[in-house]
Image (cartoon, rainbow, N blue to C red; front, side):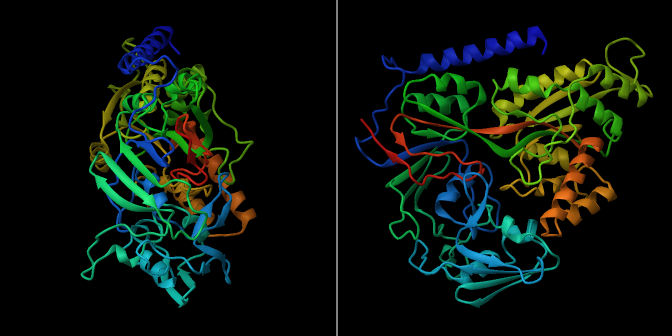
Length: 524
């Protein structure tokens, strides 16, 4: 990394820390204690960055909404803290025909928050044609049938590993009591350990314990989610004792919080990977050699070590986090090689004819835009984009960074007016490697069209044979490394911080699920 840039970066981070410290009232101890908590109360306060804008199955729960949903709603199939598939509201399941038909056997004696029974009809309701998941992800479902009160049959148009899909908290089981007699949504009704109590838009969501919960009841009485969009403000509130927990700790705050007395910082590799998605439909990234040159230009080890303070794992082009199914441990990846990068650009016809440091081809300079979202990952993505911009400048590419809200990015993406987008996640619920669909020609987010690639993706997702899946997903990883429809930068490390009062929290690799089971508070 350029020495001057690194000095500027460190200075900015130091000023941010000093500014936050100045706002914290005088602390003789190393942590401040809020005055809003009642001694020995079991009311947990959690900081999140965005509100829940939708509670119903017809829309996707985006942002931090899913952390809240995971307390109210539950799924048929669950994952443990290490991403192993386990029973949820379904006790067991089987397929009689290698993945075209799936039969789920449901738990008995489970009730929704409004007292109505959980049964097969509620599963059919939750996966009706009106549900988001049927419209966007599970289009191959032909029918869902309640065979009896506690048995449900899914019939698909093609074989697919359906149980992995049903682990996602954004398409859980909802009670029909969510709707009034006219079919209008009135309130969230789930089977989870907490019930919806109240919501103040963009301020707070309050959940209370579900005393009739079928599983191990929570040791907490109430969970309040405080909406604080700015990461620095959220960390400040946490250090002031106004929050018990923050579930997305900015990487630049991790070491400082780890040094604080009483604060516990837990880290675990998640399934999310940050990546640069190329617009392969237009110049310059319609040329594979140009995309490969970007892969050789960016130092992903420096991104982790210098920008993210050692939090995360350098991806070096690897599409799958190591904890994903079928992640190839022997995949040949990229390391920074500026000479190789420049040679590829020269082979592609790009040269610096006017000696201004920016390459040209057919009279046009090598310029492109890089779109970065103002959303939940902005704290790290903005810094990462600046380092990528600097690395690409070294090979003669001029990158303009545009930090925009998601709506603006969607508009530019829709008309193809961009060069690269810095993203994370996408189709990575649990360990199942569905992510490769993002580059499929039929994906709404795709900007890459290759018939061979599409065939591989379709074949990998149309078998439940583990050996065949492994072979196909290994082939896809090799394909992405060579063709580079996207360049993968950093495997995310999920970071959660809890205050001195919080006991019993265990971080999970499953994102965006927040497991609060076993937590209790010891306030002093």
